[in-house]
Image (cartoon, rainbow, N blue to C red; front, side, top):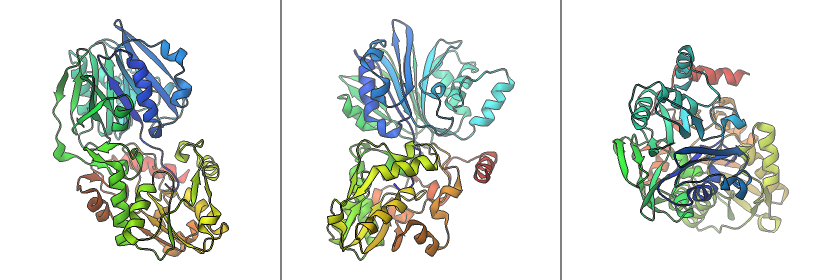
Length: 465
């Protein structure tokens, strides 16, 4: 991905399973690509809620000593990259709360478009916030509910709040899982030795030996009881689904499944469709490692052009969108990717990337490919032009950073240093994935959940700062 995105987070939850904290750590490690700022696990042991979390990668936070402090058969876990709320230790999740209905921990993937308005209203009622995250808004709304049970309080809270989210809640009565009414953010239900578990992606289920059962339906709220039963608190409606297209294009691991379908297969078909819409006169195809490689395979196969290993990724450098700030992202890109000169020297290259957001990576790649002897660099993007900020869990509020908003094709080419540039159409995404029910707001500006005008205004003010 060129000019990488700050990604959605990852969540996990399981009940009725011995060694649950260690399983949660394994699941979070599998979800590490979704967030590399912080990690946390909450557990229930003998009626007591235990919490361990910290800044850093999963293996850095959860040493054996730290995991040993967690006991019990019910846990939730979280890996985070901040979309709402700064990168601070107090914002690491799960968040712990004491409430009228008992203690609970909550972890959240996504973004609430009306969180700021709700926060101001709650503060006017005397609520005191300890973090800057919209996750805490959910908890305070739950605490102010007149419900007689904690599951009902979550139902009440989500009736007031709007956006894209997947939420897991741990309390003495089990684990709750909820997905937003449009299913923008993913959440799946699995089984481990007959006991239910929840995760942002199926790769986390595989990591702990669980079997995928189904996707949690949009708007559905499930209660996983300590005995291993799954109770439906709110029914979902799959007909309303608007799953974020970037889950298929970039976010999810290629070995994960969405709606029971392979992410790898979807990306391969995106590459095939891109080749049909935007063929390049090239001698070889290069994919930007790692997320773009399946699309590059599909592109090369469709055109009958060889795909070769011309770009090498340093495996010890994380996703560059994880680095806050433009300077940090640029430095990360320069350390992350290098060229194999023997592969590209004297040849025209079709360079396939899954998306073009800020252009940081692409400028660097076209430059080093030319320095290595490529005679031409034709950039092909396996998604449409990224033109609009996302308000549902991806940090792209600053439109000035969205390079595809440049309306002059010559200037855009100059900015990325390519000989040609073409994007997959929005219709091509739907055709390749085989579904008409994706959220494409970042491409089309058609937001399934209405975005308050003041939030759009705040984004515009950020652009001027």
